[in-house]
Amino acid sequence: MSESSKEKQLSVGVDVSVSGLHAVSVDASGKVAASISEKLDRNGDVIAQLIAFVGKLNDNLGETSRFGLSVPGLINRRSNRVEYSIGFPEHSKTDIANEIKVATGLECVLMNDADAAAIGEFKAGAGRGAKDLFYATLGTGVGGAFIFNGQIWRGVSGFAGEFGYVAINSDGMRLEDVASSENIVRRTRSRFHQDSTSVLSKFDEQEITIADIVAAARSEDDFAQLMLDRTGMYVGSAIASVINLLNIERIVLGGEIMGAGRLLLDPIIKRARELSFGPSFSNTTIVAGELGELASAIGAALSNDETLGG
Image 1 (cartoon, rainbow, N blue to C red):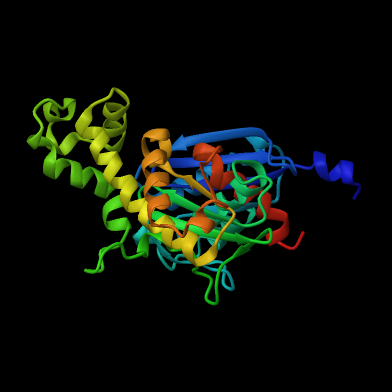
Image 2: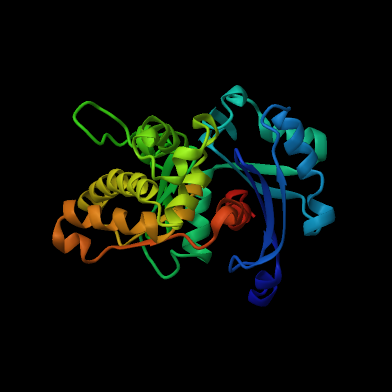
């Protein structure tokens, strides 16, 4: 196949997240040619919804016989199965790929969502031009992925990059315990009555969401900004460990919580600078991801042919 033909060839990627289903077709550079998204009913049959969504790929994204599938969880690459799904624990050990093939005739290869997003940002987003990269996703869970010398690095058992498991104090508290969207909301709920001037104090405690906290912070609500500052301190402390250990070239931060933009990125960088070895920090760039909610789908698409041996 000629280089020009490869450039025109489109690959398909699908991402399953707690918030919804996303699919893209991309060219070799990661440019999105078409995309479709749907909400996911967490109370319904997730696999059935995924299969129905996959059944729409050819009509909406062009003819394909195979695709990359990004899911939140630990992937056994030898068996192409989900060992444990963080967002959907009820589907752990499920042979999702086989169920999809039986129902639709389409072949898919599973990827961890953080690995997929890292590849997407590396090839088509905020990681372009870097040789080495650490990607961290901050959302329903906290995860990560490493790329060294242009290649995803998964470690000896394939589970490298579990950023949420980094201990952030001597009691063994993990980063995910304070920096996932659910735990940011939990911390906010436990304290928001202490500041009656905050717009959040007018909310029913059980109705506050991460989007509400970010929106309040954007409107210069002091309490909401404090909660993001503290989250940034926790994340920045863990980022400093990555910098000190690996002296890595670029760190890209993505996921739902990074919708806060500079309100979260700035305190992360500040704390990472404070705790990092100076010469290492000075050669590390910390940036927000560019691909948003499509990062994992784009990465899954870009990995499709390579992963499947095509």
